[in-house]
Length: 219
Image 1: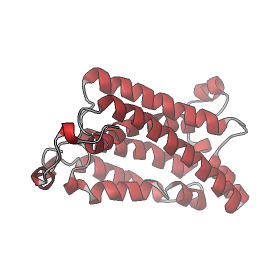
Image 2: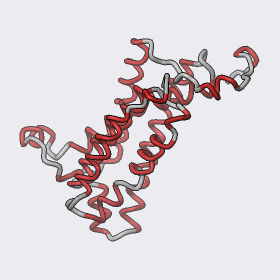
Image 3: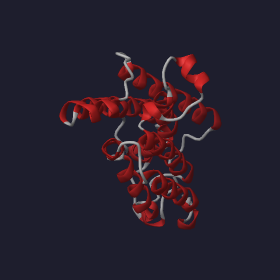
Image 4: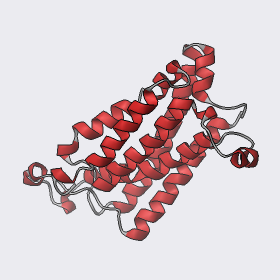
């Protein structure tokens, strides 16, 4: 982010308001707590690291938008989110969780690419994009494993609500696949718009000497 004042406080504030409203009387408090084990730390990390400017304003906003969709699912539990009846008939199930998995890949990839470019260097754009896709696939797979562990370790009813498979034996594979499709789409948009660039460095980072690009170890 170009300046500390450019941090999207409005988006962060709207998310905080949404979170507080939806934290009131969720459908199932235990499931709500499980669903937000990772979302709350992520939101706090984005706010706590705002002065380090690790990510661009665009990427921070996209992450908060994803979290906004997620907290809706955590309030109702994903399989019970109110959706149009026509969509249930079309997909044969409540597909809100499918949407959020797709948005995970779509909205998280820009942040992943920015962080990778900061580590690899500006000339490693193609590598950063490919690694970004791998990161999204890995995180999505880890989340499915987390759901499985929760279903096994906590109360079975809570665990099944957390997983939200709705009787689909291929639920985990479809969710992971949709996250990857979202990441592919985001990568195409980033490449087409020329947005595959690292976030601007803070004055402290800019003052720190870096090895010339040519001296970096090829990957």
